[in-house]
Image (cartoon, rainbow, N blue to C red; front, side, top):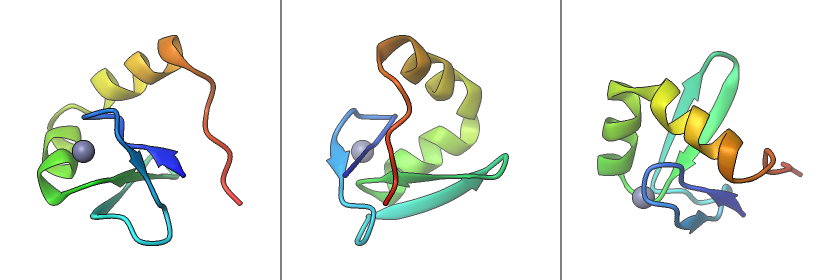
Amino acid sequence: MVKDLVCGMMVDHRSPGAVYDYRGKTYYFCHENCKKQFEQDPEKYIDKEKQDAPEPEQD
Ligand SMILES: [Zn+2]
């Protein structure tokens, strides 16, 4: 499971609602709407995540 950085939900990365590649990393979202918000200002959500918790591991 990975965290949707926009809404904070945990998302199954094997069947996410939406996926977005940014600066060589793949981000997963529960829904297209969350992806669209992330696209508009990725750094805002990435910076927030760094403060909250370590990077999620991918298997
Ligand atoms: Zn979401």
